[in-house]
Length: 306
Image (cartoon, rainbow, N blue to C red; front, side, top):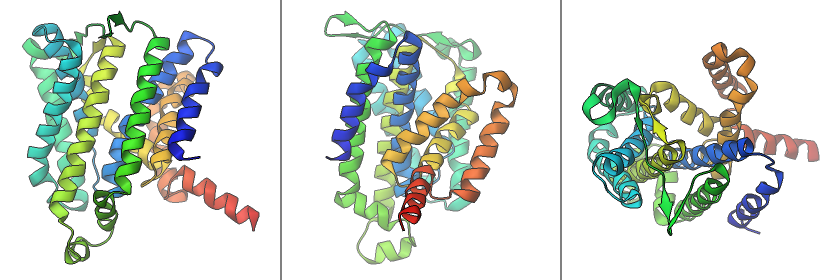
């Protein structure tokens, strides 16, 4: 049974364990974050390009959907797709100079991009509502409204499954093989005929488009958005999902997203230390599980079997 079939089976059976609307709410958030984490893992895990501003693309999709639908009267599905396309275009244009940077400079470049998006959203009150945020209309599909977490669960499950399938196939496609070659020295990849700048730009654009699309879904689900969607901590949370699950692991992205999304429920008694806990987890993963939680568990299981 393929990983896609296993995931489809799990998503179909999961509602049997969801006994309340709150459980469905958590499942929806995990699904949205897992889909975004998969897109970020394509960039960080396979292309080897660090991004500390990915939340900016999530916010672009969210605010684009809200602005086009509520202020300009666009149909919500059209606003959703157009916002994702707009974020992809921005990523394509901005990615050309940013992806020429290496190492820490690339991390700072993506961080700067995320900060610019955050500042624009926070300061352009006439368009975005500024720090107060703005409401988002209800999503209507096939003549019906998605109003509750149980309805949203199936839509997000389908999106997660589609992006999982797309990413799995992409990894084994020529572009995926080119991305894996980028994990080593770029000069070596270029010497075997791989167009390094083009490969990096394509995956950066695709990653941004998926993140923006899910940002739009997140806005429609929440019914309200604020600039915190684009802030630095949100970008760190997304990167942490990828690192915890394991760089270069699509399945690990889902596991990492589930752990980091559900962690605040455990930390409700020490909410003021949430950022500290995230930092400790990041340090612990980098020191003791550099390949991520899933790979570390698999390695441990293999050692036990021996």
